[in-house]
Amino acid sequence: MILPPLAVGQRIDGFELEQHVHRGGMASLWRVSRPDLSFAAVMKVPSIQDDPTSIVGFEVEQMIMPLLSGPHVPRFVAAGGFEAQPYIVMEYIEGPSLRAKLDQAPLPAAEVAAIGTAVAEALHDLHQQHVIHLDLKPGNILLRPGGQMVLIDYGLARHEKLPDLLAEEFRLPLGTGPYISPEQVLRVRDDPRSDLFALGAVLYHLATGQRAFGTPTSVAGLRKRLYHAPAPPRAVNPDCPPWLQEVILHCLEPDPEQRYGSAAQVAFDLAQPRTVALTARSDLTGPAPLAEQLRRWLRSLGAVPERRNVSQQLMRAPIVLAAVDLSQEWEALADALRAAARRVLQSEPYARLACVSVLKTNRIGLDTPTDEAGRNLHVQRLVQLQHWARSLALPPNRVTYHVLEAPDPAVAIVDYARANRVDHIVIGSRASSGLRRYLGSVSTRVVAEAPCSVTVVKVPREETLGAAVSA
Image (cartoon, rainbow, N blue to C red; front, side, top):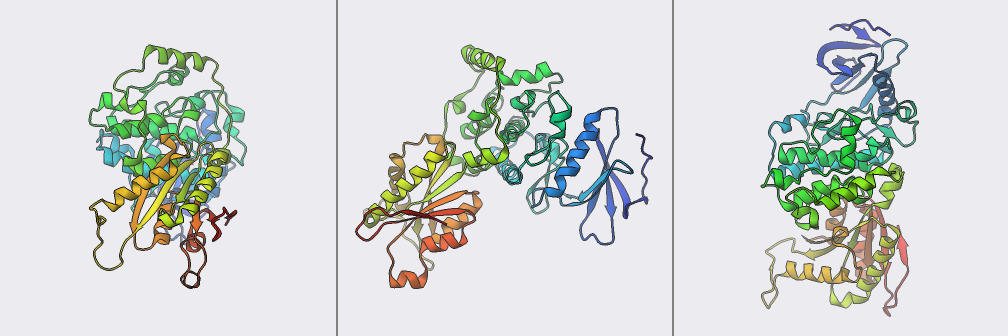
């Protein structure tokens, strides 16, 4: 199929070509306009080559883009088929791509974390729309003027509710060499944790100035990542802090089961470095021991990743917030809340528990940070929170502790849940009273305003455990 060359001023289905802005190996981009469009738009036109993957990939993108929405994807406008002039018209993102940051790498840890948090948030939003990107790399990550990261180029993506044309028609690994995940090398295309591996590779490059796996160009070169671990970031850049190395290597685990459970969990750790649970990963400063490399190599010989689609994986890895009232007079309620949290965690093997307590502050005037004995109230509350969760016996990488200081506990809990993409809140409700009914209880307001499901735990006046009610 030979398409005629395009030119400025040409009209295609009502769109006027105004400027040629980019030519890549797979497609060209043109700035276009149409009288009814209220925002800048770009037309993506495929480069019809002998490589059939470029044609099928464009078909895939035409199928997926109309189904996407939100600030982390370009707005879809229109598409044209191969019977005439194939194209996709979408919102034009004015900001630069993340590729420009690679020339400045290694970046300070705080900047790497901020970028990683924003990209992880974009990925989580994409995964919630049943889509795995499968070609995440700096050139496919754009920055909106408003600050959000935008993911582009869905030619290799997988939508769990659509046919996977690429898997049906091709037998070679599909992706970009430095960022492709081990399971993609094995032609598994339905695990969202593949995008977390690519995110780890991007963060590695930003933190060290080097690619974690070089630039392999053969299947044999790609297969090395099934058993060969990259040099620890701190061995390449001594200024990389242990917590950042922990996050990066956690994303780069060759076995998807050993990675983070969701992009939201990655964003959670990057946004709150002090709560990152450090493991042996954070201490690595050289190559993995030969015995570990041998174990990885033997495991890779028969590697058959467990198949799990986006929805199934996100359901296995929620972020659960336990809003804990640590007042001594409410010990029975704290016990009931702990029992409810345990039930939720037992049913979600990869759940992350965020234990949250609100230290109420004055709306007007100064607050005293210490008690009468001079002990810091924030630290005391943090210790109490850790004591509350101790009997849950969770590994350090599955539980974090947070003391929020705010005049309104309900607002603080809801804001925290929204900012950290919490999937489920477990909260206690105190006994009723006329004043509480008039003002509205914290739990009632959280149920009404929370961006996720809420389980409310009540204890009758005689302090026997009550049933949990979900809202």
